[in-house]
Image (cartoon, rainbow, N blue to C red; front, side, top):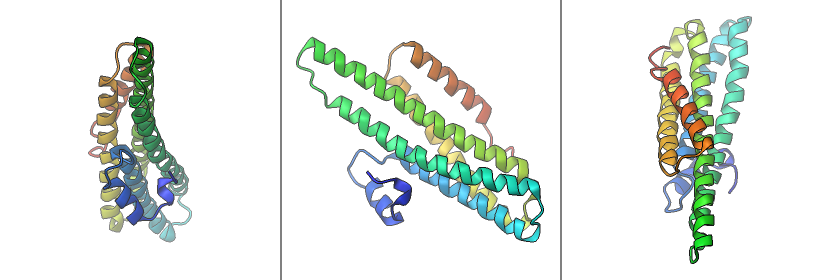
Amino acid sequence: MNELSRLSFEQVFDLAASTRPSPGGGAVMGLCGMMGVALLLKAVRITLKRRPDDEALTAAEAEFARLARLLAQDADADAASFDAYMAAGRLPRGTEAEIAARSARLAHAALDSVEVALAALAHAAEAMTVAKRIAERLSPRMAPDLAGGLALLEAVRANAVDNARDSLDRTEGSPRREALAARLGRLVSETAGAVERV
């Protein structure tokens, strides 16, 4: 599959609305996060036109540009991880050895998808943190763009949490699973109510 962020909006829509397994919610949310960051960038750049020497906004502009690229990568990674999970589900299961190998691949792919969800969650949270840091420096006229960008990033956060929990539910106890569950718990705690704090 091509990089989702390089496709036209109509192509992304058609893929997301199709009966294909991917791109699904996580991939679409990655792109929504990218667009949320775009609105934050707009707010920063329009404000910078009047205050070009504002170093905090200039720094935020670079941070948002980096996070937009990362969220685009998260979208692609989500689609790839779900494809890998579906491929594992199609492995043969005619013998006990095949059943065991299939189960192991499914668990590995599910935990990989948790990693992807946690990355998207972390990137969305970081973008919200940057927005919080510079919110009062933005032109008041940009309040709707700030609010819209944050709403999209909150949707990414909520979806990533749901995806991570769903994938964790499809695995049994293992050191990797326990470590990922602990990371998820920390990120959920750290990001709860992030939009309201901006």
